[in-house]
Amino acid sequence: MTHMDRRTLLRHFASAGAGIMLSKPLELLAAPGAAVTTRKIPGTGQSLAVIGLGTWQTFNVGSDPVLRDQRTEVVSAFFELGGQMIDSSPMYGSSQDFMGYALDKLGHPEQLFSAEKVWTSDGDDTREEVATSADKWNLKRFDLMQVHNLLSWEPHLETLQTMKDNGEIKHVGISTSHGRRHRELEQIMTSHDIDFVQLTYNVLDREVEDRLLPLAQEKGIAVIANRPFGGGSLVSSVQNANEPLPAWARDIDCENWPQVLLKFIVSHPAVTCAIPATTSVEHVRENMGAAQGEMPDEATRQKIVDAVRAL
Amino acid sequence: MMPNDISTYSLQDFMPMESEVYFRLFVRQNEAVWPWQGVALLLGLVACYLIWQRHHVWQARAAGLIVGSAWAWVGYSFHMQLHGELNWAATYMGWAFIVQGALMAAWGLRARAVNDCASTRARAWLGLALIVYGFIVYPLLGPLSGRSWAGIELFGTAPDPTAIVTLGLLLLTPRLPWLFAVIPALWCLYSGATWWAMDWQAGVATPVTVAIFFFAAFMPNRLRCRQASDQSTLSASERRLQ
Image (cartoon, rainbow over all chains, first blue to last red; front, side, top):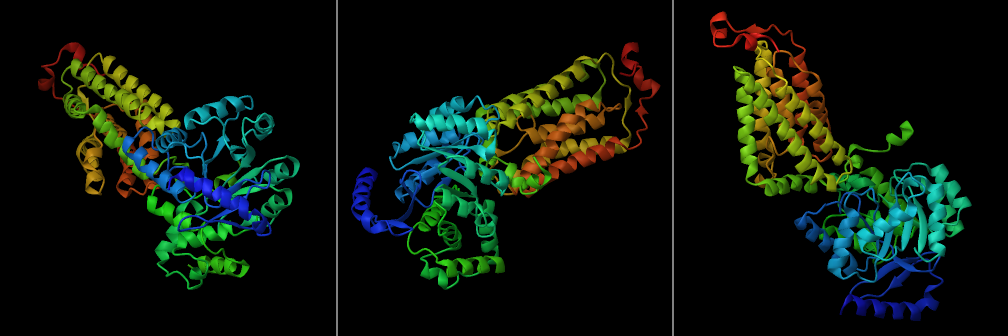
């Protein structure tokens, strides 16, 4: 079965089951061999797989033909397993160029949810930078355009809203990372009509649970969680500790620690998507496993926090 | 940016690429310049010999031109062409290397007379040690620590050995031209931080070469001058200090 066939089938299935699914916070899509958990974007109702793909560092491979082809395999596996959102930025070196290369190679899969950023201090350059990024990805329009790290956010957001109204982009968002500028982010979420907010959230970096995640739920803003493994340090910690997976991990259909860490994030009701980055097909398979099966309830989420803190 | 903002970053957060990608840059550089890395290496050795000798003005000029060309070539071919694809700052690094190349070439070309004196013996030996390290030891560290032989870093085509050898050469000169040490030293410090972030421990020795350079540079420098009999082979103008 081709990707297109599977997608069409899934879309019909989702439509048929929509009435039943509406009452559930999480929506399960059937797929051959695996169901992928999705969340709806509050602003538009579009469904999105809860595990996406980051590109910081991992896809900055320049024009290296060997690495370009290897990373394309990672993107291919991501799509095969039902992944949708790929997030990049002009700040990420040649990652945008790589995305254009990979998408051309893979025939521009329709399930792609392209998330980009505007990263320039010149508030008049918004359109130019969006056009340059689209050119690099070889896309006509992005599904999501975010203001990177709140840089010159006021003029950029104004232009992006106009572009959204004109149908030039589908969603508008704003991003931050490393837990920075949360107060300013909160003000923007309160005072502006944005579809997405991207922030750092993981099992040890939970400050956003206090104000930003509840606010996102209240305002109907989709949440992208970046640095789900704390820049890799969380995975290193669990690997170095060499602790076996707790028995309760089986109850939430986790086969490894990365899946436990990711399920902690995407089981928060405010989170729409987590975007782990990887250079490995094996790791993308592991990560996408977190979009399948049971999700942890509140008690299990607390067990995850306790287990990671104890490592 | 507030100080507490900076504290939320680690060194790795400032590296825009994975270590595998950075290591591959040297493989690609060697593929791109093949077989000229051998010529560059040979010319580098010739430059060291010429500076060590310093019998004639042309030797100083040729050495300056060779080392200057190596810097400019690394700046253009490595930083601007390859590294620049991955890191926006690499273009500026490339320009810094080209400036260093111009400085070294100018240093050679402005030589009007050879210097009859040499650095104090300890400083000269430390300079020689850095040269040997940059030419032989450093290039072997990569392959011996598991990196590909195809990605071997050599003087004249890779930045680290070029900078380390240059620091060593500067120590051989009787009157240290401090200005010419700024860019090589800054590069070695930056490179050490990069290797640290990329978890290549052997590369962390690169900043140590800067420490050795400054240690040697600040040693009391009693110039050792040639005896009158030796100077008889030199012309009157060549006997003047530079």
